[in-house]
Length: 241
Image (cartoon, rainbow, N blue to C red; front, side, top):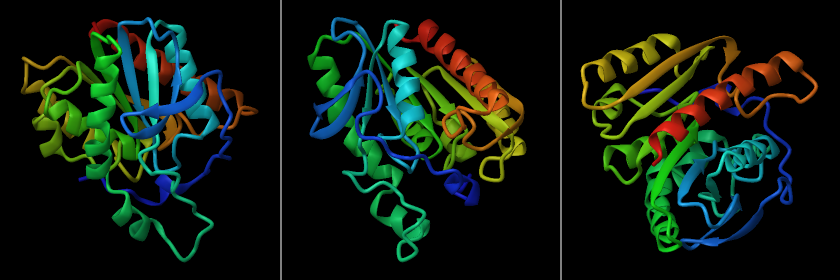
């Protein structure tokens, strides 16, 4: 299984509660950043990494997905207690005991039900790092129509073997958390499941977290992130219907 290694905790974002063009509301019992037309029949659940739902780049991604026609929800699976590297008294192994992905999976169920109650016809999910494990669990149980994993962590080959919905795995060439060798094993596992549509890509010259933890001033980093966003969005537009 891919663990949450040091790369998962590099470049923590500045958390800005009011970032993005959407707003925060209660959904399925959780605070959630929501963006996009409430009249849309298609939704994307965007599962954050350990840094939580207030990360500006994550909300920009949510807004970008919303602009393509989706109603997008980014739940606060951590109840305001996202990971803070500066807190030396609570390192990642301690923090994750309180906020394991199995909890995120359970919290996501009422969020999905709340979306359905709004008249949503199809729901896809995208998970970054920690959030990818949440999305995989949803895909294993067919609670979503489509899955996208961006530089996943905590995901095993056995997890991938159990996926039952279309899935795209977008990995980084420079990734100690989910290295290319493991991503290739994911690809092999999916290739043995012809009934499950899949897409696997390893992006060159990027590190774990590149899709959401980039610096706006770094043109190359922004370009690499936008390529991943484009691929994620194209996959979702095809399979969330």
